[in-house]
Image (tube, rainbow over all chains, first blue to last red; front, side, top):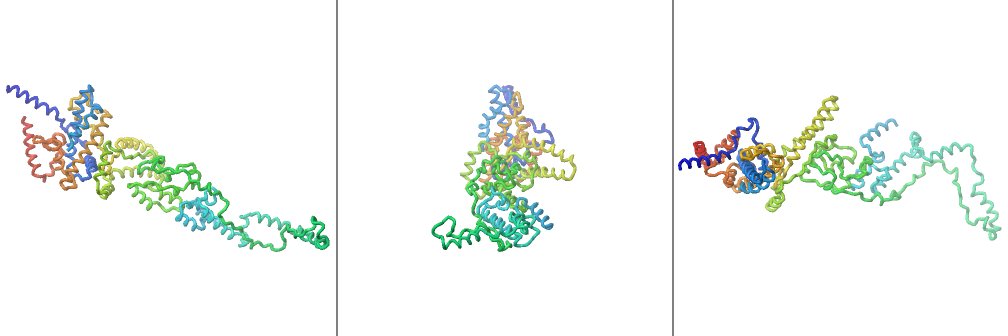
Length: 104
Length: 494
């Protein structure tokens, strides 16, 4: 029983590590992760508000989460459709759901 | 005579199409320019019968010419020097008369005198019987008196009223116009491609220097963004002596650089900056129009372009480079301009392709914004695709397009939400607390996952430092941070 629980725990343990993206340290060292000014500009244009100094980091974090959701869902969808890669059609199908999930 | 030549040549160089008559007295043309635009061509096409504008303008021209003629008539002024130039038929006749004068004799029997004498004898006697050879009425005189006066100085030059003899209907026909919006090449704001300032594309435009005056056509629709450029153009355009050109430039749609002619490369460097809307734009625009009840603020925000620093200097650089090419050619080093002209269009072509793909989008507040670079999006998507367990993690081009679309929608939604939170808090600035609120409402953060743990997972260390740097965060956040440390400890332990 304890063994089985441990096994279950290990399985549970395995899943998040699987879903965890690779550490960004794998990225090229000189490369920027994203253009901060561009993100600020985009949000500023949409919200008509100023964006404080470091809020764009969190914004990009949110965007990364959104992308994770989008790509994951699309991968599931295209796997169900029997495609190998991630197709544009599955992304299109999944986009509305992902956006609704990220509606504040 | 010799002093006349340089002045006239100079005048011709300055105002090429101007006739001398209009150049000596500029008053009618000036007045006509300010009064009615249809007679603005007076100075240029005065002598041309087809191009005359209004009857009044033509009459004015004719009056000027008559004044000149009366000024310079040889009989009036006795200026023999000018007689060689103006060889009128009357002069020819006079020369002929001078040649013939010593050899010829005046006719003794003029047609008026000799029959008259005969008739005087017969009239009293035979009036009633023969009407045919006798004249009751005095016979008209068929010759001019010879010795009356040789001097023709008091002969008036015939004056004409000036308002006759032209087919006005043919000249008053309106030529086809074209609406500005459906012009042949409606390009972007800074487009240099339309060298012609008039929007009329007819056959007469290249016939001569005058053509169809653009003043006849309605001024182009000036957009709000254009107004600055046009004002700048009015102030900056150098004063040119021919009225046509300056008028056309002030009225026409004009680029930033005024009359500077960009060589043929200008067509290639320009790119279409059509405002490509995001697909949800229509609905949100209507929403904005409904809920936006302060138009003044709207216009203000419209004026301060967020993207201006990244938009304008690039085009300036391109155009400056293009303008430098002829300068180099003038300086004499021929090799270098060739290299630049060869390399520049290629670089610009690649640039343009990229730019067109990126496009410029306008948010519902009327602010242009760039989209996230596709490379960043692709890298992120590939990273997540690797972990999603798909066989082929490569993101194809059309998939990337769809993802970019979703990205745009996401940022639009995010901006809406964040602005709602910031306004609700009475701020005009979106700060981190709004973002934390949003992420909690999105259920991305919970008791176990804090923004900071997420950031530690997803973001590189430099950005993490940026996130932690502002230490004066609210107490709740610091509590969260401690909890986050606990949670991560748990994660690390297990």
